[in-house]
Amino acid sequence: MEPEDVAEFAMGLPGATEGEPGPGMTLYKVGGKIFAVLTEATTSRSHQVTLKCDPDLALHLREQYPAVGPSFYGRLRHWNTVLLDGTVPADELGEMIEHSWECVVAGLPHTVRERLRSLHQGRT
Image 1: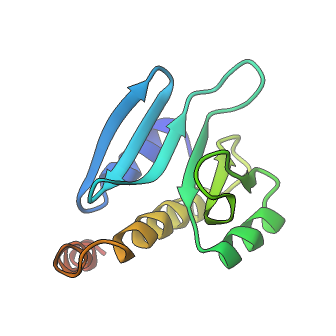
Image 2: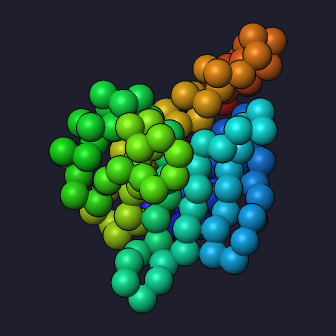
C-alpha cells in the first residue's frame, strides 16, 4: 500500500478526520483521538504508518512481518509502526488500519461509539 492508499483508506472510515501537526506527518483521528500517524519517508527509511493495536495482536504482527515493529508514539505495547515498503500485503494493512480505528472507537462515549459502529457496518 502506498501512503496515498493509506490516507484514502483511513479517511474512508466513519468519523475520520485528517490533520497535519507538522511537516512530514499526518494524523488520522476519530472522535478527536488518534488512530493512525502517517509519516513521510526519509533518506534512511520508507514511509511508515503508526497504528493502535491490541497488545497481543501487536506482538503477533511483529513476529509475522519484519516491517512491523513497536512504535515510538504512545505506549509501545498498544502501538505498531508499519514500514510501507511493500512487504505487508495491502489487505492485511487495511485490516490493521481498521483494527486501529475500532480500538479507538471502543474508548469513545457510548452514543458516539454506537453511531460510528452503525455507520461502519453500513459500509461493509
